[in-house]
Length: 252
Image 1 (tube, rainbow, N blue to C red):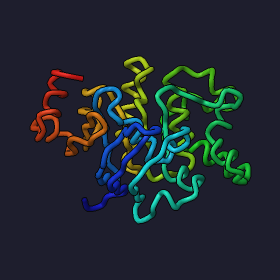
Image 2: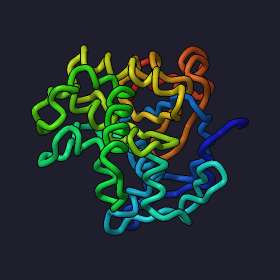
Image 3: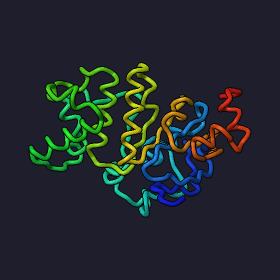
């Protein structure tokens, strides 16, 4: 695929002897929103965690195959550099509970021992919160704990924390599943704005969310990548019977 940012070749993932992902081959296009969908336990989140090498942190977990971020083999990058280039936002908002909003945004720099001047910190915090559409709501309470925010605000704070490292790709693991409809809608609108500057990969169980937000959709089933296409084609004219059955609600 022209203008791809991630190139995954013959990826297999295991937990002990159990094979979770089988021969995944996919190219992720730059500055697009790509949804991973499929029934629970089909390997979507495992694949997401392989992309920033979180998977291998689990005892007994391993991978085979290759993943390239542009031309760089992610298995040859330092983990610190890789996780600066590939950010992640989890299912449940997880601001660091002992840190203020301000400290949460620049936590990536602090935890990696990257020194910043006071003006640099202030610029990064404001820029990241503006990009996460949170600045107006928190600009007068930056030194309060991040955990005093609502669930939707906490999730946008986590997005700001990821954006502060200036990543190329941001992974979202069901980022709205614990949020109310209004907060979910705000996150979806934010994703559409962010794809101008970032490549976004989102794991979702919500078919309507995939249809609304993503440019491309991948359908996973039992550890296989069954089908990958533009969202419009995949939803309106799927090539695989299993994809069609899943979209029409016949299983999953």
